[in-house]
Image (cartoon, rainbow, N blue to C red; front, side, top):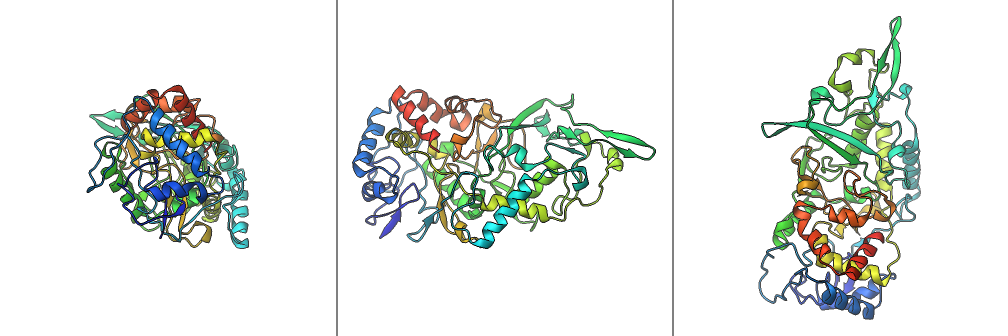
Amino acid sequence: MRAPNSSGLFVACAQVNTRFGNEVFPGARDAAACNARGGARKSHLSMLKHGALAIIAGALVMGCGTHRENVATAPVAPSDAGGDSVASVSELGATSETSEATTTTLGGPIAGLDAAELARFAAGRDDFMEVETVDDGIGPVFNEASCATCHDAPVGGTTGRTETRFGRMVGGQFDPLAERGGSLMQDHAIGAVPAGAGTFTFVPEVVPAQATVHAQRVTTPLFGLGLVDAVPDATFLILARLEGLYSPSTRGTPSLVTELRTGATRVGRFGWKAQVPTLHQFSGDAYINEMGVTNPEFPNENCPQGDCAPLAFNPDPGMNNDGSDVDRFADFMTLLGPPKRGNRAFQSEAGEQVFRRIGCANCHTPALVTGFSPVRALSHRVFEPYSDFLLHDMGELGDGIVQNLADGREMRTAPLWGLSARSVYLHDGRAKSVHDAILGHSGQGTAARDRFVGLNPRMQAALLAFLQSL
C-alpha cells in the first residue's frame, strides 16, 4: 500500500501500526516511511542523510527528556508534552490519492488554478490594493484605508502593523468596554464633515481611562488561507482529540463560533483568538472593523468611542458596500498560495527533527488535510502550515482579551509557514527574533521552551535554521 508520512508526503510502506511502531526516525511513523522519505519529494535529502539526521536528533538533544520508549502493545497516552506526539495526515483524512498543495511565488496564486480562477484572483488582488475613500463609505472611524496597508510585505504578508485591544476585569469577568468603543480601537477617523451650516469632526478613538487591560496585536499574514478555510470542522475536532491522547498537557481546544451566513456553530480558525470561522466572514469583518465599511453580514457602523450620537453626521449612513468587494477580497485570500519552503539544507533538516523532539510540533502541527472544495487546487490537499489552529493556554503570553470562548490566557497557535518573511514575532510583535519568540512562550508552551533552552548550541542553531526555512 501507499501511506502518507508525517510531513504529508506519500511513501511506499508495509501496513504497520503507524502511531506506536518503532520510531527509529523522529517524526516518521514506521521504518518504511523513514526509508522512503528521502525520495518522496525532490528537495528532500537522501536516505543516508536522513539516517544521519536521526542520529543527530537522537544523540545530541541534551537534557530534554524527550525520548519515548518503543511501544509494541496497546497505545498509552504520554504523560507529558515531550517527544514527537504529532497526529499524522492519515489520521486527519489523507489517503494515497491525496496530493500536496503547491504555490508559485510568495504573494502569488496557488498553483493549479484555471483561467477563470486566475481572473478571480487578479480581481481580488485589485480590491485588496484599492484605497477606500469617504465616498466608498470608509469610517467614520477606522484603522486603515486599504487591506494592503497592513498586508503588503510581501503581498498577502504582514507589515507588522499592530492594533490595540482593550477592556477591564470586573469581579473576575472581562468587560470589553463596548460602551467606550471596545474591545477593538479604531485609531483613524475621517475628520471634518459637513453638518448643516457648519462641520462636525470625527476623531480617532483612544484607550479609555476605565481600561485595565491593553493588548497589541500584529496583523496576521494571509498566505494559504484558502487551504485553512477548506479544512473540515471535523478535522479540527479530531485533531483536538488526538492531541488529548498523544500529548494531553499541550492539548488544544477548538474555538466554537457562529457563522453569520448560516447561523451554524463552526470551528473558528482565523484571527489571534480563532474568532472567525470562514474567510468570507473574515473579509466582511475586516471591512467593517478595519475600514468602517458596512456590508451585508456587518450592516451596523461602529459607534465612535462607543457613542452612537455622532453617527447622525455620518456622510454615508446607508449600506456602504453590497458585498461585492467583500466577495472579491475573500477570493483573493482563498486563492493566495501558501509560502514555499526555503533551502532544505542539512542543518535545517536536522533542526526539523529537533523541533519535533522537544515538543514544538505538538501545537505547531506540521501538516493538515483539506476536504472538498469547488476550487480543485484546494480540494483534498495536504499542506504544511505548522499550526493546529486550536486555542492553547499560553499563560503570561496571553493578551488578556476575552473573545467568544477564548479567555484572556488562550491564543490560537500561530502558523509558522512564511516565518522567514516576517520581522516581528508573537501576537504583539514584542519579539524581534525567532529565538526571542521561543523564549517568550509560556503556559502550555513552557515545556518546549525549556527543552529548547536545554539544547546544546548546535541543536539550537539547527532548530532556528529550520524555522528560518519556513
